[in-house]
Amino acid sequence: MEPFVKQVKEGQPVLFTIDTWLEQYKGLTAGFTSRQGGVSEAPYSTLNCGLHVMDKPEHVIRNRELLAEAIGQPFDAFTYGEQVHGNEVTVVSLIEKGKGRTSRESAIQAKDGFITQEKGIVLCAQFADCVPLFFYDPVQQVIGLSHAGWKGSVLNISMATITLMTHTFGSQPSDIRAAIGPSIGVCCYEVDETVASRVYAALHEISAAPDEQLSVIRGKENGKYMLNLQELNRKLLEQAGILSSHIEVTQLCTSCSSDDFFSHRKEGGSTGRMVAWIGLR
Image 1 (cartoon, rainbow, N blue to C red):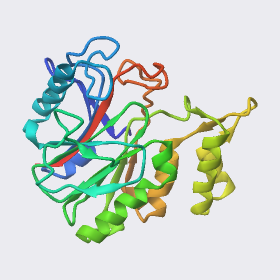
Image 2: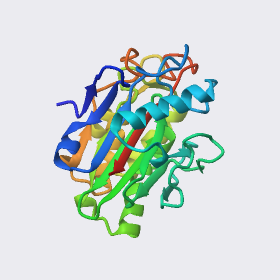
Image 3: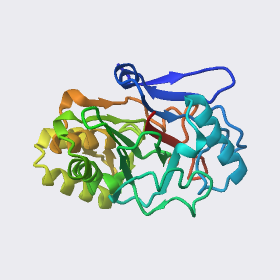
Image 4: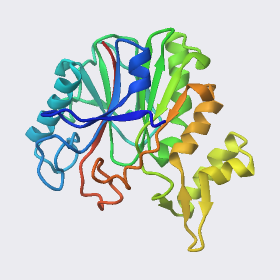
């Protein structure tokens, strides 16, 4: 069953929510925006939530406000970082609440992962093919969100996020729920030898068997490789101690589903950004 369920309501942005989590854990909000239901103009039409593309800032801010209104959270709760495709994860306190929601300059700088135990903070990260990783510890009431492109994946941002949850808030990996959100799929993600070598090195680090490696990356006759970033991150989550039964994995490909999602690769880099969010009410 697809964990990210499309929500279409008249007059609101189209969203994809992790319904199994929201049904089981009252007070949690978590999901992923689409490209539909905003005010931006082409090529960012219409729900672009990225301030770092060439969209009008006032349109982006309005789109972010529309997301807040749709999920019933105050706009000043939404907290953004300036992502750099690394594996640095930070703890977000009430001091950082609301950073980055109206400008890049005010965002939490040079971070790709965020965790918090504070209620009333909505963690946000931006995507247009990379893998959104959601984390929730229902025992210690800790949430996390990480941005895993191929670089963040091979740098094992999954482990970095879980380690910080453990050291800061006492989370046990076996208690943590994780979800892998909409991102470019193995059907569409062709990479070169440089990327492939880094992926193979990451798989070697976790002692992946040959058949496990084939489920992540396969060579092609043209000398390129097809990469399954979602499966790579699932294996990294399990290696970090997350139970397989606690991992939700989407089947949605941002490149295939261009009616619903922006895709940096498919659209040649001139496109908008979706937002992944998670928060404790």
